[in-house]
Image (cartoon, rainbow, N blue to C red; front, top):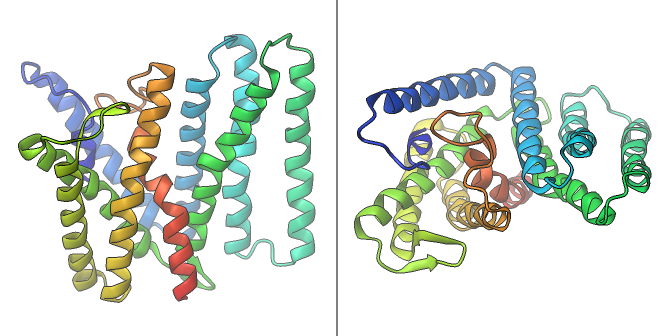
Length: 292
């Protein structure tokens, strides 16, 4: 959870600012732990809210041409983007068991919103109507689908693997924290200066080492997966969570924005906190579903 304490420019002269950031981090961790270990329904509720907020922040970054009409676009994009998470949860929780019913519900929910986006753009007078539609659909792929895959990681029949999700979160956060700490002390070789000038190869390697050490500790303490499985997940996180961080940096740089939002005082937005986690979810889900 230390991850929350480094993605900002510290102001050592402001004790009040440090206390605010510490309080934000503590509250965030408590909410995450309560939602994660409170049972299947609190888990789905927690990550549905996280998905929605991440989508709202993303759409707020890319839709900035017409604020009045973009509010409608954001609502449409939010509903479309959160549907994969909700639908996968309905399946995993056993609310919908029949494949025909699932296809019917999916079609009835997706179709109106997808085509309403096209219809809405016809009457807005926007000079980039298909770009607006593309941004909305990209939100589904970039944020909605990965969080939907999280349901397949968490649920396996009647089993709820909260500890596996916790392990993935911890691996991701400590990978990023380790990269920051090592890079701050020994970092000299820029990783991708065009996108993120402060990230270094030394930091990335240090973060990877800390991620593998964390994987071994998770194996010894959680009794959830084999040592090989945790190490594979660590490798996935070390590579793809780091890339996810760079992808969001690329997005923010293209929009000339420092943070995705202001929800977490002193830490930016929620998408800033989950960018790496989102990006490694498809690969982690593919591996875990394969070994199961």
